[in-house]
Length: 339
Image (cartoon, rainbow, N blue to C red; front, top):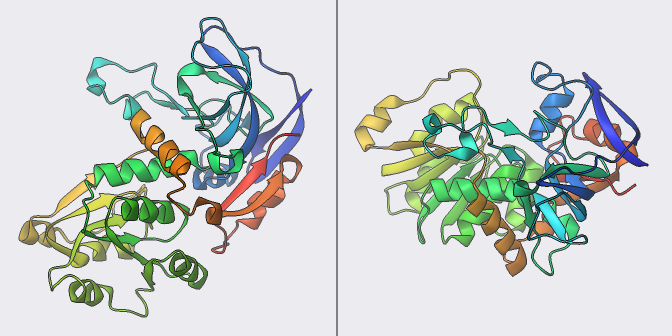
């Protein structure tokens, strides 16, 4: 028997035994090792996505594990392979999606629109599975999904060596974006309110400031010969950040919007006109972003181990979610799903 954590409704999980799901043609059954708690998972736990999630449902999508069983027709994988899952199902893609399968109009996000990874045994489409490079451990592997988000953001932002990048928001995704942008050759400064996150960012070698304590537009101009930042990554989702981000930018600078704004907010559109700025959207990731994330892991190029705040067993998933409530002193909390 396997175990799974079922989201039962607002702030409630039940952990119970389940049967394995035999993989059908084109599917793979995985023994899940670790699954990270994402901000989206927390939103689901709060009941914010009950119209989308089929209660009771297993959620979770930031995972690592081992191939246990192959369905008919699956090639390129073997039982025992250590893997991660890119949790996007674009099989409803149409010509109207213009070939952008990762954001197609009827995209299904595995772990939200279908059962996810907070369970010990998980059966998924084989096309979602990526093998972990040799030498990458399963705890680090569980960071592949959010790291791929950052790879996609930096790619969409067209970051070039020597550019000055400002990351607004020093939470987990902001920190991954900062790491990948620095790896791409940018000078990175992080804007964040939390003293813990500021200290964490500085420990990783970033310039990091609170906008309540430092005049960040003035700092950016001082450190760019008076021109301003080349790119701003808006990761905070704060209205004040959306309004003030254009003040940081140089002529023909770019804003890469990472945060989700479910409601309209005020922007300084005059700056877009006056400085010929660009606003660029970025959502999830493509296959090559996942592969880049795995290559960065294999190279040991990023301080990823620092991002893992805690590991909790599956039976303590409720306590793990509760521990993230209003907690700015956690980066990534992993759930050990191995039983």
